[in-house]
Amino acid sequence: MPNNNVPQPHQLLSADTVRVGLPGQTKDEVINALLDVVATHPAVNDPEAMRQAVFARERMMSTGVGKGLGLPHAKTEAVNETVAAFAITAEPVDFGAIDDQKVRLLFLLVGTEAAKSEHIKILSRISRLLNRDAFRKRLLKARNAGQVLALLEEGEMELEAR
Image 1 (tube, rainbow, N blue to C red):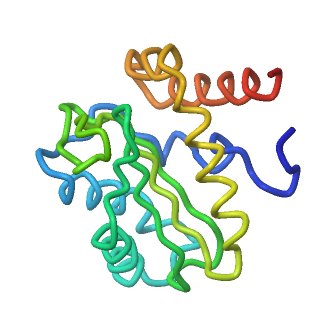
Image 2: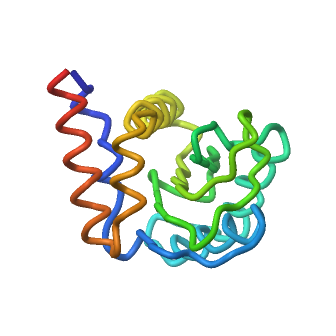
Image 3: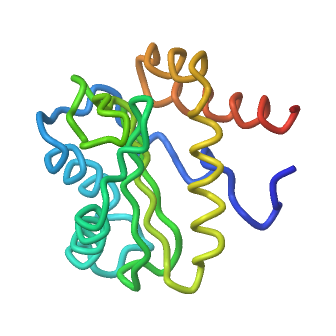
């Protein structure tokens, strides 16, 4: 059962922070495009510092976690609460993933240093949610933000029912 104090992944998103058909040929292009999506979010104090934090984390080790999923993330004081964005890329992107599969599903998560535990729990939840092949296939068929949000919420309920 999820900790009620930790938001579920779909609760961090809105139609404004979901993109279907995100353009970009490279990992840097798609990460930058996702960062642009949240740059004007009210919780973002410093969009450029947020961008630098995400890319610094990416340089440490690719966030291509396998099975076509990228989880670019960072903890930084450039935000005053957790912000997130989700995208399905227009084309598969080489992300330097641990399984060498190209990425089409991206979940960006940027949180504060103080919310380190929450950040880890949310990343874990996203991984569990998107680890299921059938669920990823359903997501890849989504045509708009509303469908993505509905699928993510449905997937969360399926996880809880287990």
